Length: 421
Ligand SMILES: *Cc1c(COP(=O)(O)O)cnc(C)c1O
Image 1 (tube, rainbow, N blue to C red):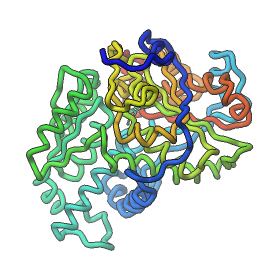
Image 2 (tube, protein in one colour):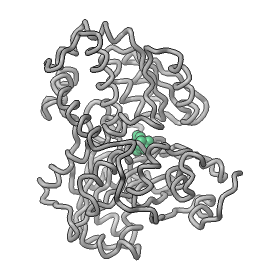
Image 3 (spheres, rainbow, N blue to C red):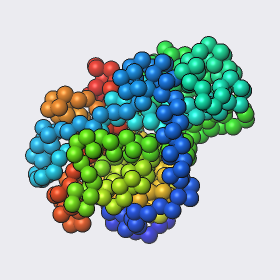
């Protein structure tokens, strides 16, 4: 075990206790060194350019004009349930951001993952002269493009949902795609990918190992693009575009984030890319009127550990004797993304850990009360509301605020496996 100063949060983490941590380093300001607002704008523009292609390749997106976006739904019955479950009172409205139901891949990874592959495809097609600026991108669904992309490889290491997202979009474009899956990845995800012509390589080890193997096989092939979940800026920017979309949805719901109506956002965190990108976008858009918190399993609190100790990716859950074993498969990560933990140092207001035993009852109740299924991992968001409502620092603003749980996955889970451990 490595040495570091004794910290009460770390001591609790070692015992797998549920912990709530408020970030002393929060300033709300990030000076745009590694990630810039310009990069996020570019991502947003690129997704608009690709909308005609997306509509053609994935007809379920015709309704939204080829823009992959999810509803923001008020969940009043679930709110009552949470009030009872935790013995709290929540005066404001409570919403679910349903990325669990994003088109194409049914999880938050349909933001970052699909964006990174579209950017890659655009670059190759422009370089090879098959595409010109100003073209209607629906041409990319054509056979000559598939033939072009079949000469290029894509690789990714994943606990499941990123693999699903990268695999589906890459195979659709015609890339030769390999997904390196960790032991905790679900069988149905591997089966679905294989049915779409994706090569799936399985590892008996954890997520970090799957990523490392993917990176290694891609490294010596210039025609292989490795989607690096631990440090990709493209993934991050794809996730960050969520903020301009939710701004419109807030307006439709009559929500104007302000000092009088602050918005609290609860985001399940694995390696950090998805919740980190969303948080970056939201903080740039709404500043101090929005408060973002990450949720992690008690057995894999990698981001909290990296931020609490200030060691970022230089400390892993194993270093403090935590086993990383959790049923929250999308969150089973032992070491945070160095890129994201750095950006979150000043933008994230805090984090909390959740015992696995809470997840399935939360998923069951959400389905029963609101008729929405989200996967157990995504339910890690819910318990955070009690930490905020009961905390000295946030209780007053939480009482006049709006609460948004970020539902990160679920709509593609087969019915019979919905409540499996
Ligand atoms: C990937 C994922 C997350 C977290 O995203 P990271 O980028 O790994 O932090 C949360 N929930 C679900 C269901 C996921 O698939």
